[in-house]
Every structure is written in structure tokens, then in C-alpha cells.
Length: 194
Image (cartoon, rainbow, N blue to C red; front, side):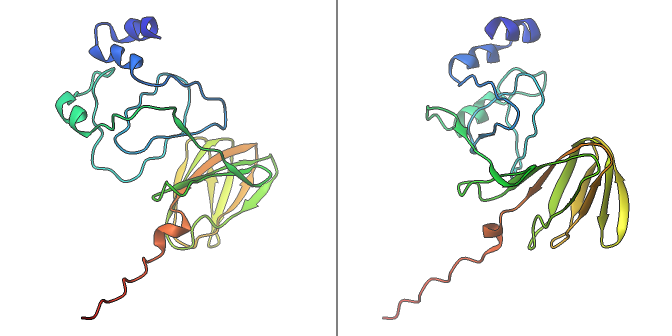
């Protein structure tokens, strides 16, 4: 891995980071969860990445972009251990949900719809959802309005929207939304009387 990174980044100091990080090869459908302030690097292949709202991405190496090593060193979580993996829940054939109680901000639904197939699903009744059609062609109907869906198409779903998806060719789609628990109000604390 060090030789491969050296070919790509020459004398970038970030090459040495591989000695402090887990090296993981993911297969299709496998998922890692990176908590905030956990260093990570993506080397090659195709992935779908979903991030919680954030006001920063801090880089320390392996990039031609700005590197803020001082801030990175201050904010990093320096705890070791194996990477946190996330097993999907099969909601039905062709529909996987990547969700975990520790991930409060989002969940991801992965759908595969066979050519000629249809899918109607409510992703979030309380908040918006963002869909990415990774591959295949078809159309989506929301509130009676139909739009064509092609590879790379991204569309926003309003809270409570229940899109009807129709696949002309086999479609693979990812939809990010907030889990239902995200919208529940915390219970009020009981008042202490003196």
C-alpha cells in the first residue's frame, strides 16, 4: 500500500498514516461507520458516502488540497481498535437499510429494482430524504408528477413524500434520510421543587 501511495502522491507525508490506520477492503454491500474526528482515507473503487451536517473537512495528507495538520492533530480521536462495521437490515427483497442507534443524524436505504419492477416507499414521514440513482433507468412519480430517472440523477423528497419508482432497466438507488428517532422531542425534565 505504501508503494502504491508513493506512486500517486510522491513525497506527501500522509503516506506514513497507513501505519496508524486500519486497512480495509470492502465488498459490495459492506459498510463502515466513521464517527466524527476519526481519521479515514478512501483509496480506490466506488463507494457511496453519507455524512452528517458538518462545517469542516480537515485534511492532513494524501491530497493536493489545503492541509491543516495543526487543527487535525487537535481534533482527532486517538483511540485504536477495529473499524466499526454496520450490517444492513433487509426490509424486503432488494431493499436494505443501513442504520444504527449510534448514528442519530441519518440512515441509508439501498434499493435494487429489477427491470419492469416497481417500488413505492415512504422514506421519512417527518423530514426530507435525498435520493441518488446509481445505475439503471426508469421514472419516479411524486404527487402525480412523473420525472425520468437516469444514472447519476439526484432528487430531493419532501417529508411524507411516497415516491413510486418504475424501473425500465435494473435500477440501483440509495436514499439518505433521518431516522424516525431524530424527530422525537426529548422528554422534559421533571421540575425540582424546594
